[in-house]
Image 1 (spheres, helix red, strand yellow):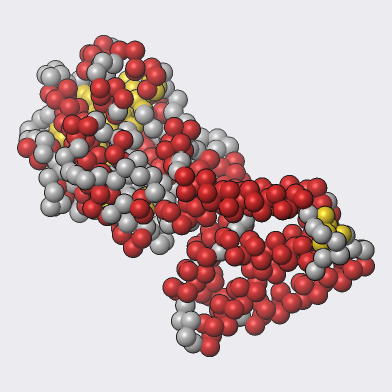
Image 2: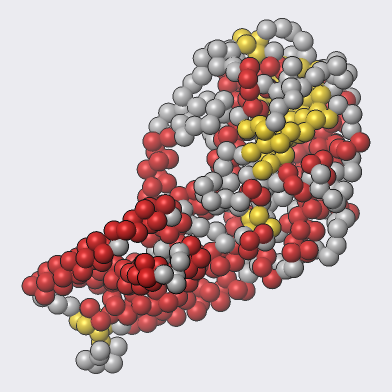
Length: 508
């Protein structure tokens, strides 16, 4: 293989790098393949062997093209690929994520505070072992190029071989097509390189211009306020209101005029989930969202957040943690309780009769569930304190998560207590989560899987409603979508709009 120490012919070098890429980063890819094909049948064996060969040859082929055109660019890209691959495969192995387009959106929208919570020694080991050490070898290697004639012969024969292998697997095209998103999300480095490109192309198309909705009118002068609480990673099966065996809703379970509905999220990740809550229908287009629409039509709108990932919000009162902190006192200021700071006073200070308040929480976001609530809310013990969720027992993990639901219960009850004191207002609280959460079931953690393969834990969400008027009745809906929020808020506030859909209104 060598002519001199560290001297490689370009073909030998790209084959070696492709082999290392295969060995280091594709165990999850082939675990998925083995779990989803009959590996004891002849067709299954052919498919598995073909995918292994294709993985090696295709990567070597692309590396060969890059290195022939520029060794400097080739080395730069390979170093980048190995570093990013090591990080990607850590998250795949640790949290069972798939690096598809939606996951890329999550990564690109993640703030430093959230990203830093994933730091662990294991992550550093992955980066050094699978990223840094191979990168040193790549940088030091001396590569002997080939003539244009040999280059053309090599790529022609390689393309012919690839086409022959693809043709030989014609019977498996349907299986590959069916699982293409998952396979593509586990193939390194193409999972993130291709999906980053797709993400930005689709974002550009979606965000070219927000589609405005038809104008609305306010029907009456009754004082009405809705507090919409957007939950984070809250799954309904861990709420005792929904029949969970542990008492995670000690306060809400005793609250009169409280209703809860079965509901499904539009997606399994924050950006799409929040968009689904705020839009009038489930769509890939960017329509004017609820706060923007109401604000433009003369409703008082206040947005308070400890989270991120919402569509563009065009209102005057958009308040992040740092805006609320100066007026906040006590231990709760370090948690989502900060969103309640001066809430009642801000409502009373409004000169308008119709008010929407959105509280975008982060209470149940992993992996650091045990850091999302004050110590006095650690009801269930022992808890998981590691960011490597697979190291914790499922009991510890679920206990930590359940404590975040107990804290959510407390926050929602505080919102209700504030609203009860506003005697002159007809008030309502609506709590809907952006998506659910996996807690080790089927060895899956957190969220973000494509809806086509996501387990129910990642999309079955709570939809909880409280009303101040005990005579106010709600429809006996079976399963709601997040889009019901838009139309229900319009109905409650007495907003007349051509876009209003009575079928998606929860109130009688």
